Image (tube, rainbow, N blue to C red; front, top):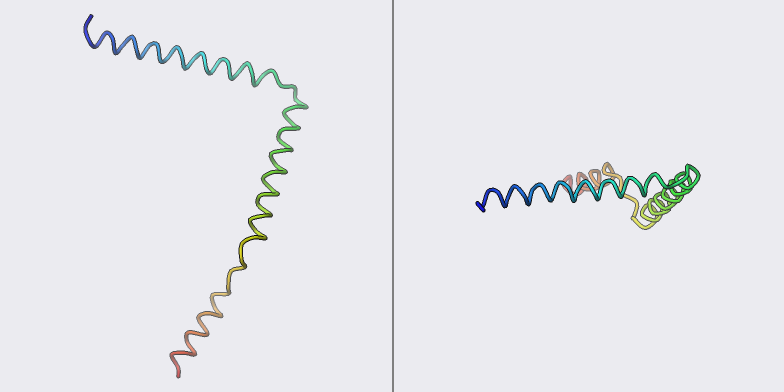
Length: 78
């Protein structure tokens, strides 16, 4: 068997395996009821908003750029 035939067969096997994985995922996704999907989306939204709120409270407030510029200007005026 030539090397290009082996490469072609390996490529075809990869395409088939990818198709199998996609079909399994699609079946799993369609097995959810609309209420279950809605519930999961609400949970993800709650997690995202709580994570964002935690980041906002943990991060220090940015300083006003004009205040810093004013201080630097005052230093150089002296």
